[in-house]
Image (cartoon, rainbow, N blue to C red; front, top):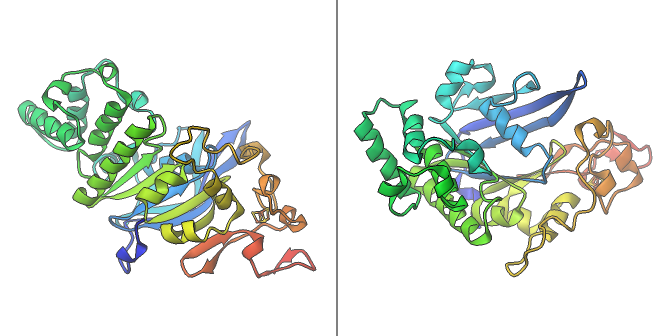
Length: 342
Ligand code: SF4
């Protein structure tokens, strides 16, 4: 496991403060990301964990300013990258940052790769957007990138179409596209979920290698704590749009506090098991329209829930230095007798 002591006093590369991202449903706004704050230091790998519907992907789309127009919007909060406020940038300025300074890869490469163009054409296009290269130079650079992400015979693959490649190779192409401009930050949203176990391990190894050689920070979004253990320095556990626990990876695995984190830990599959990874957590994340207005959002699924959890809203508070938890079990500032937060 990686250690956070590698980043003692560095200024953050990305700072997210009080982020609230809402979606409009039937004329009303509902927060899919509800007051999330965190930072990422240069070369740090931050894991963001939680089931589908916890707000992880909406959070990353907010950072990239890629929310569906007219439906999703940032209501509150600041996103500062390299000293620049991203939420205030217009499309043109944000386009310059996307790809060049911040790269992104998604779970299903086929949705991001265009089936009618060759791999070489698509990779060269993302290079053209940021650098002025001749056709010959771009082709050479594309072959070099394909080689860097471990694609064998890159001079042949450069002329192939996405459907001619395996899922693992397509994901390598997406990674090549995302790192083409050597971004300072890579956001990887479930990059291995659609792949089989062996290929998953290879892709994670590739990302780790690139993080070190390119001195890149990574936000790794996943539902799988097993993936986090191998790759990340620090972890945010998200539930229903909120951070419910934050700690460095060693602390989180040695001393998980939040009941949701404990359940996620128990659902990490052993190498010889192929069952559904989150099968042991009963129930589902409440939908945006059915989110509890007060109390703990995890209450209906929590094996440790108390009566008070329905009426008192827990706050994210520091349990130990650098270890934050959002759970009444660890809050001292509420009064059991009066059942109210002080
Ligand atoms: Fe469970 Fe209550 Fe803690 Fe929520 S506040 S996680 S319901 S014990």
